[in-house]
Length: 235
Ligand SMILES: [Mg+2]
Image (tube, rainbow, N blue to C red):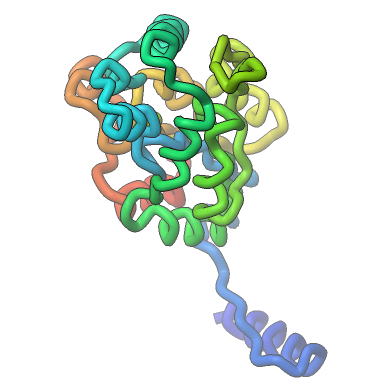
């Protein structure tokens, strides 16, 4: 009751000062009550389709369908990809032209916009800056921490530079030292330590092998479930 009275007073005051109808919505109580929350989200498989699977489809190089869902060791996966790219003469401009045609997963844009209205969100991805721009534009430019490619003058990808080793986990660890409450979600093996490091973490539509290996980690199978988890209580 008291909250309603104060809300009405604020709305009346704002209406007088701006001349516009007020619009204040208080976030869920669990967010107000606890330390400031940051949600760390994986990108591919959570908000956008797997980039490399689309590259494989367009280039018709089936070997490129391997992702972090298949090969847990990221360095092994990237070395495999670089070898395949070299073998088939696939350059960065060819890959970026494929990425330009990728749309976010159905419902992802609305889900992310709604989440960002209620809490802070950082995308922690093992993708590359050189790949990300068209996708970030479609997601309304969320904050993104990711890796970089090493490319020669002919557009050939010769290597990659990790932002830091185990960057997702280290980001969660660092944010936690800033007295932030970190929640996290992802779909792949490279999200595991991020999820385990967070105050609360969940898989989003993970492969069966991960659910089997880590039955204690909650699973969200759609954006409604994920939103409820990420905005829910810390307990
Ligand atoms: Mg992923």
